[in-house]
Image (tube, rainbow, N blue to C red; front, side, top):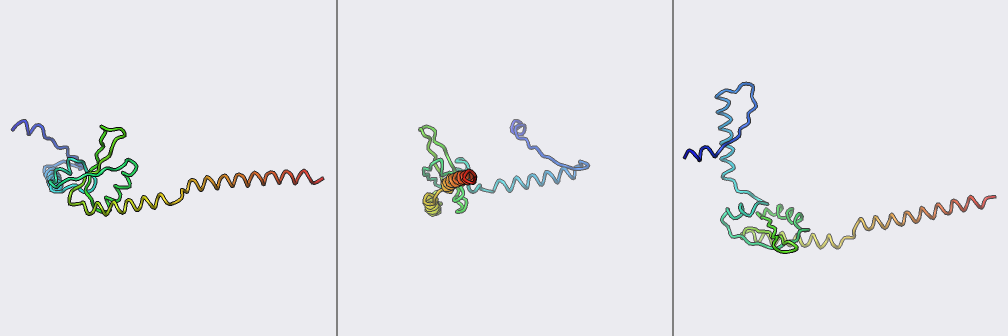
Amino acid sequence: MQDEINEKTVALYIKTGKLTAEVLQKAMKAALAQAKKQIGKQPHGKQTLKQLMKQNTGVSNIEITKDNIKAFESIAKKYGIDFALKKDATETPPRYLVFFKGRDADALTAAFKEFSAKKLTQDKKPSIRKALAAFREKAKELNASRQQTKHKDREVSL
């Protein structure tokens, strides 16, 4: 019993003019109330695999590429899907697995439909950087031809 008490410590920071028993009591009550709120609260959205398993629901997984992780996270957040990312480093290149609750399967299929549609439209759009580079080249050519005509005009006038 004594070992358990010694192992658990709590850091409490109070900013006050004068530390009294009443102020300390209020701070402790506030800290305990906050801790009580956190205990009953289940995490939502992105979480660790351990937290996802603690929720006692069936867990399924799908594979995803490294490039698509950030884009998937935003869409999963939009649909309110609880998920965990896990990197499988046993293979080269490493695989990334998305674990999610079994009951979120319908929401996940809808999220993946939106995600794949978004990726397809992104691939169809022309690259702005490539177009910009092409326009820069054209501008350089135009400027070079203008410089040549200016020099020719000056030489001809005698």
